[in-house]
Amino acid sequence: MLTRPGEWHRTQHAGWLRAAVLGANDGILSTAGLVLGVAAAHGTRSSILVAGVAGLVAGSMSMAAGEYVSVHSQADTEKADLARERAELKADDEGERRELTAIYMGRGLDPTLAQQVTEQLMAHDAIGTHARDELGISEVLRARPVQAAFASAGSFAVGAVMPLIVSALAPEPLIVIVAGTSLMVLTLLGAVAARAGGAPIVPSVIRITLWGALAMAITAGVGVLFGTVV
Image (cartoon, rainbow, N blue to C red; front, side, top):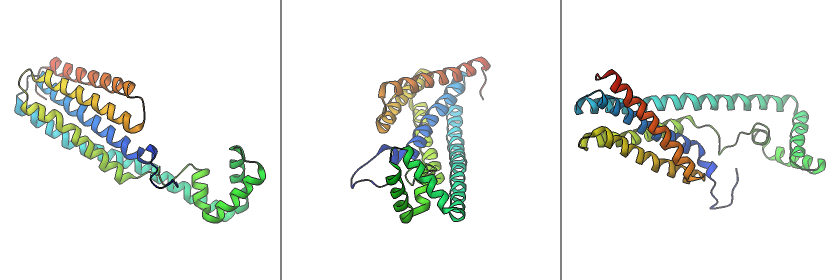
């Protein structure tokens, strides 16, 4: 995608932003929920911290692996589509030109101009033109598995550190303080994510706070129900 010098679009960072927000949100909720569950089951502070650290490590690795596999599947699909498109260009160049012309006509160009655009763009970069305008694959939005994996793992770890620090330093009642600070950070995360993505802040904050409170309440309830250290 060509842009003017200095021009910036939010979609250029959509991939890593999605992975980072998901990772941080997951890190806070998973670790806070684990801490609250163990605390509600009358676990000692040391057992709470051990469970939290184990959750941080396991969660980071799980996020990295899951994101890598998921995004890599998308990348494999893109590669397969591009390989098929190259074969079709080689086998039926004229048919592909007609197909591209029809696409441009469908977007509002008259037949003569649509054909001219097709000829010029295909002379410049045939496969790139078909990838962008027929398949919807662009360099900016292309799947990047390694980037997504690192973004998810790193953001999960950053998010998970907060409940651990609070668990180590906060006085009693630990459950109330961990839950309260976690909700505050989730609210801030929702606002930052909405701001970075250009979305309305209030709905994003309400959504992430409500789901976070529900998740922590259920996890704490499980700890109370079983009443044992897990």
